[in-house]
Image (cartoon, rainbow, N blue to C red; front, side, top):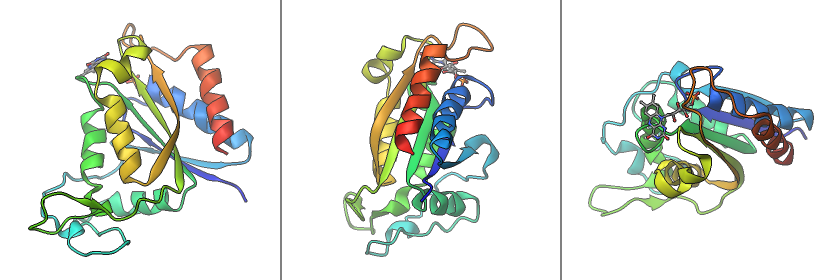
Length: 198
Ligand SMILES: Cc1cc2nc3c(=O)[nH]c(=O)nc-3n(C[C@H](O)[C@H](O)[C@H](O)COP(=O)(O)O)c2cc1C
């Protein structure tokens, strides 16, 4: 059966570095028959977590539902029905973008965390989804996991979603010109990663 791959894009720009890299991954996956869908966080209605903790109150394997009426439930339902998720964000101020962080904070329902319990407990340790993590920065790409919080944040988001990272793409030197694009080599690598996902 055709694999389903969802990409969560935390860049503020369509057609920029992150968008191009994610599209190359998805194009590779489509070449192998996968169905793909890109969700731009800038186009989704996602409210901030209000720390009401309602989503964490009920014990059990089912994700707790958020009380807010916005696009989050649909996004998470789509991710849960997928075979793989691509999580992507530029490095802004040393970590993922604010819009990606806002999405992450809304994943609290993946934990059981009633009042009185000091820390959240994962509802499931089973990682059935695969994920590819993508970040871009002005600094050289190899520095992203060493000197920024983006790699940790993307890994944490994958972990919360029950996704196992099978590849990472750290794209550097992306801040030098207004219309920077990943190199042909990076795009080829991205496409190969996508093919492996499918
Ligand atoms: C507000 C802001 C903060 C940024 N902070 C960093 C940073 O801390 N480190 C870094 O290497 N690049 C930083 N950059 C550069 C971005 O990472 C780079 O422009 C981005 O990866 C390009 O991705 P895009 O084309 O998808 O927007 C920053 C850019 C902006 C706009």
